[in-house]
Length: 330
Image (cartoon, rainbow, N blue to C red; front, side, top):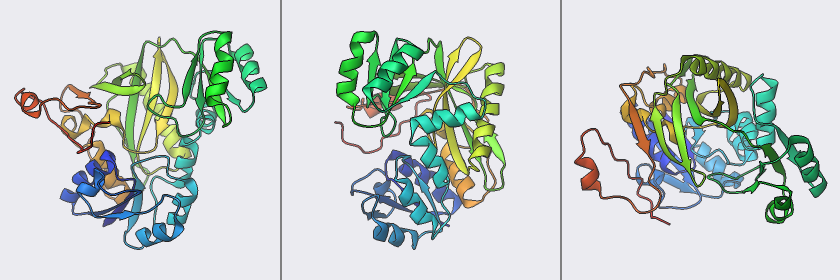
């Protein structure tokens, strides 16, 4: 099949590299050339909200998927008029709005941090009184890797946070004193079959994923995470790979957020699992059987931000695998 990927970053690159051995071809769509995905697949350049270019793109592929969850939902629906789109536009719609995402978790009986939608300064003060401090104020849309967030440690922080972020829809989230963050990466096929990877433990630095260690072995938490995941996958009639990040508070899991795509905390599966998350996503969206998610052994993924270390020094170490996306450090 010819698989179209909207967004041509490193995730698109790794999807293509996983899909070529299965006999598939790829076409990527992004706003610029010179992308990581464009290094390994032909590309079409266009705005994410250009209906004409999107339809031209759709006419050349058999199925469409994404490497970025913030593609406009309206654009996903335009594509879905001409070609199957997985994950479905509804999943993008929920994941793009932090309040809608939290509402879904709550509706499905999945615990979250206390939260409130904030549109005005009055809403902000009301949320602070009801939920308490400390807390974090976030944009409902587009914030990632620590962007679009302001920490609120006491009442004096409310006005500066509003000046920084006010003017767009926000969410107020109560602080969770959690012990660690874990993530579950799972895949659901077109036929509804579901497979789960082992839980992984994540560590962030300055709001960006720094390293992931897997498997994180805790049977009660694994079972709880998989129950939560199945509810979300089935509620969204999902096809493809989905990641949910959880805070661990004692013996309890609280859902933080979900990503309707292959996820950074699943990169370890390339060498560390029988079937990588990228291959299973390709299998799912093309209607192929899903592969085994068993871990081959303990694995750690380290995320390099900025200048790359010396490749020779890394590769001289037994068991190390290097994935250079070809990006320019910023």
